[in-house]
Length: 420
Image 1: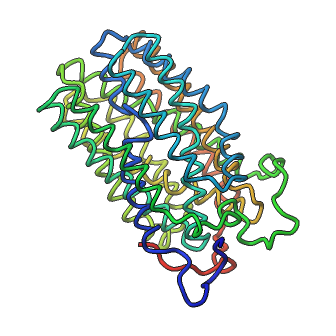
Image 2: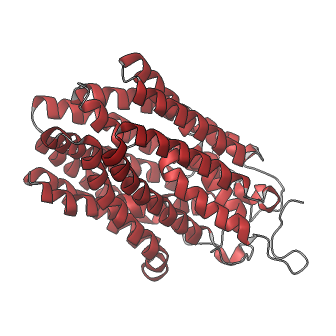
């Protein structure tokens, strides 16, 4: 039986097992959804790949993946196989990462990264739709924050485990951890009860009884706030995406320890993101979604200024802490803002995927631009340029805040039990 609004025969719609499994899934997906993730650049840099080559492969692979992202969102809107979509992506991404690690030649690296980008595009919309279908609109912002809490917690655990495994076993330790997290992700998916997922709610039809049904795709182009949200995210991620990668490259080359150096650099931002995810529901409730988005955007220009002005290893701590505030808050605010803008249309997943595609275009293009800036000038110049672009995102948001941020329609949403 498919879950419906409210309570069925006095029993809560969302079982404790499914919510716990969702938390575990987010924990393991932190490592399983991205393959080598932040370690890729550091690993390839120590195998002779130049900053420009790394930027090029990230750009090309990213753009190919982004091209299919709206299609992935449309698939998630229309399918009841959301769990299978995530599981399949985990298997393919893990296999591609293992091949890249064992055979870091151009053919394998390019093939693996393009494949990872394509199948990885399904995970974001599928996970957002799965979450919305389990807890409903009323608790969506709270559960997204919890998802991010467990996801960043998984990242920290993964970073610590990789640091220890590499110190003790070398690269074989990384392979073992990747297999472990893939198995953990698939097991968590299996424990989510498919009968507890309301697929109408999952696509944004909680305020619609089913008539006239989902809106046409043109609703995406007619929703002014959604377009502006995408533009703001494009500018932010164009500025933000390369900074951590470049910092990891720079200090990995200087210190000669790619995995351990990247673990420290990434771990600082992930610890900050855990704190941000824990505080986000309170901040949104007290300050409002718009104020929280503004705080996230303001963190980036400061981050670029610090990263470009200082070259001691100590600078990674404030720089990556600001990454946790900026990217961490936006990871929570963006799907919530998109859900509010598209409530009742039945096009939430494809709309959210469209925003992800636009912001991903910014992130992907920035990689090759940043690589070119570093090659021709310096790491500092790249950071300064990123900080300057971030100011543009703030200006756009300040001008069109009321279009981008819509008040919650929680009072119209079905009541569901609080998620753990």
